[in-house]
Image (cartoon, rainbow, N blue to C red; front, side, top):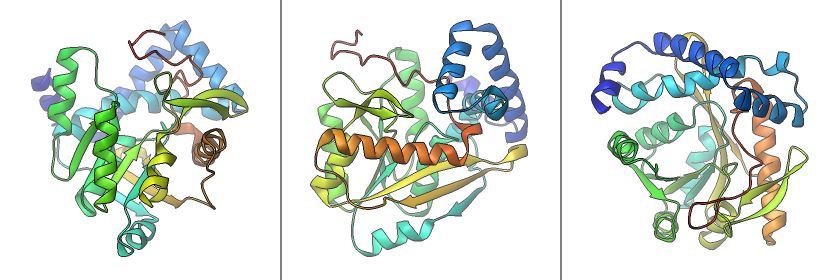
Length: 275
């Protein structure tokens, strides 16, 4: 599989995106379960299919671009809001990046690592051994570390923040049972992680909202950064509601690139992996 990904990484990004867009539509048309969830989630946020139609193809691009991002030469990156990163670093503060399943979240961590320094990204280890090996080898690069969704991973992120480094999380990812609270997301209760705001409160780190826009015709990506508005609430439920509200605002910047097919409203899995 690694060999296949290395070969695909040689293809130009426009070709990978074209193939991915086609695969996205094949999946949407072939899978009734996926299609219903996509439409239900979009409808919950107030969008009709006509308004987010291109998100079908963008989801396919998300998968098709991985070989290039993991094993190919760096893609072109534009920056929007990098001054907020520079301000936090000038104060000697760590940074907690919060990124929804919007655009290309993989390139956001890569871009930061290449330009600004060390970043640790929280991820859920793949269950299949062959896929775990692929991901581990692909993400092993300078200034970019990964932390599993375990207690050891949390300690790793705390250590990085206390050193003034950055960490990245996908706060609209459903955490395991006991590691989140129920909070509204587009008007519907969704199980939401509490880790992101706890990390910031415990370390004094700055919170920045971030997402990677996929530019048309394979021209690369534009990374967007926004400061966290106001003060983070102390109560877990209130803080989670704040996080979800900020993720909603980012998604509304470009709903055509959100992963509407993600099972955001599912029940959290137990510690043993069951639901």
